[in-house]
Image (tube, rainbow, N blue to C red; front, top):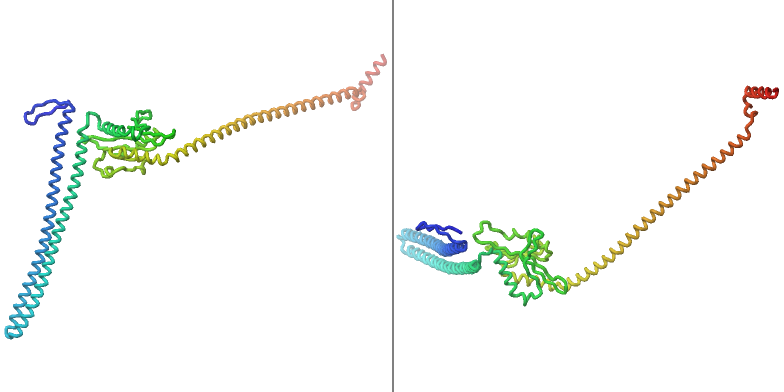
Length: 411
């Protein structure tokens, strides 16, 4: 609820939001019409003033030129008087001089009269030119005022049909109604619904998709933007392009279109379809009246390229089959090569172990053979052992053995 204080009696009374909005709207419309009338009056007064100033300047130039000519004539008259004074003693010379002076004066007067007539003609032509220019300016201003009046009436009519819903939602409903009016005749197999998938953190307003023979023909992400005149912060169309491009890519749409009533005075957006592909790929900005023509334009372009797209889709599927076959072949080759490599490594390891075992057994055999030879030599040495050989280089020991042997014999 809003409170309003009467400026006369000072009484305060409350009204609901709708009533308050209606009162504000009435006041604003009256102020707007009053301001429009004031500007129109100022424009006409300014045009009248410029025209009067131009006429005054031309009249001043004419008066100045006429004054200069009259001054010259006055000087000529003085010259004639001086000549008359000089020839007063000679009547014939005086008459000749007077006749010559009169003739020159008449000639100069005729020339000046011709010049004055020319100046009058020029002034008349300039007045006609100024009148034509004034008429042209009036017509231009009237055309501009008429165009502004039409825009104002359209905008007033659009605002008059607003409800308590947001203006953006009204614009969405307007576009939905336009599409539904032609859905069964122009787009019977097309998909056009609100984008309700916000899993990625954001979503557009509408998505348009159409397929033919199982191949997607075209897809468009739509965003509708509008704002009330009383909004404190005025947005620009460029403020929403980055988010719209992000939504288009996340929802895998081919085109992105911003349907906007922002920057209503900007002639760039009022003249038709604005291509902003230089900033964001396949993106356009349009006014609501170009909503259906934009879909038709993009759809017709897609239909012209549909045959090539279908052939491209077939080639892509064939390429995918070839890639799958190559992937399966490569997977078999890699598996076979891996198994062969593992078996080869195992075989080489087994051969190495066998060679190591053979080498170990060979060394054991050699050790056993060497031990047997040493035992044989030791046996031979043991068998060849005698006291005589033991005492060969030990005479003292030999003598002891001989003494011991003799003692045994004596006993």
